[in-house]
Image 1 (cartoon, helix red, strand yellow):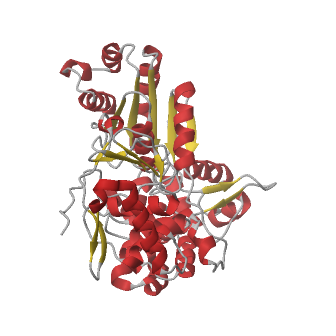
Image 2 (tube, helix red, strand yellow):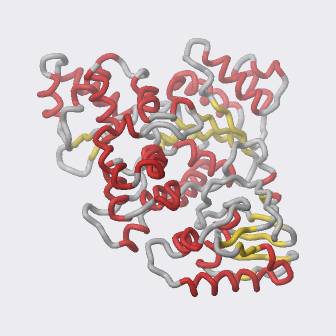
Length: 456
């Protein structure tokens, strides 16, 4: 019986299209980006996409047995494939591993497992100070590359987007793939902008393991950093936008080799800031039923990965993804309900999505969709809060005139315009500038939250 694996990379699904470092086990290094295996530092051997996906799935399982159906779904998503294809690819993996072929173990009547101890290569181990996982999230490879390309010339890049859109995950993947030193600062614990400047500085100093006196002021911190080449990531800045803006301008003005990557539901409005709006995941067209086409959509891919064996009918999953507008947090929370409810019932229960979409996330403010959205709502001025709740009556795209008609008894036109601007800035309103007259829309999750607020 093969020995049980110790898996030290993390259980997140890796995106095989990224440019991450390799996974090392024994004398072998596997590169998920290129589906290549290198042994004893020699020439890389191309495994092919199918075999590479199988090896990656087995590694991610961390010593758990994966069934035939699990492996077929991973290597040939949405396709009806004969068992013989699976056996051929497993045999190819074992040939590539040569004398270590027993690393791919067979458990009679159950499936296969990976029996090796895996760790990240030296490039990834040098990022020990960053949170895990280091993998590129599903469907985000091009975005991560774009963010990294912008960081060097811009020096201040803000990832903005609605609650649960995946800003933190994109920033974390970018930090792990940054060529130089990178540091991570989580600002959740700083509760308000009152005294926020000093608390942010202290948090940065602690993350960089600087002397205590470096946490005194932004200028003191800048002096400590000097010409240090560093990508500094400030995560969750929306409740500290003004303080973070002041800090960014001070640090960047004094530290020529520093770059800042910020996640926030609203821009900081700092000098030189480049705002990158994090989009939803790719969605299938309405009514799509072709399994191959559905499986190519990143929203469907994420849902299937999170739901696992219980994923079920791809056409139903595609419809669920559309209902949830491709918002990753909403998809993950919905997928977490599939094992207990089944895919059909999850689709039905989306009419009460705030009650359905809760649990399963590490961050307290993300454990329910309601909590994630409430985090944004409390930061809004009173007029924008009112407008959000009233505009939830509008189910589809609407114009400024439609919004003014709904709010005519409570807000004048200028206050309506200001409120729409606030909602858009806080990533609570989708804006379509492609038409002659700009159009607006609330995402389904945001609309459900606003209707619930209005009901109370």
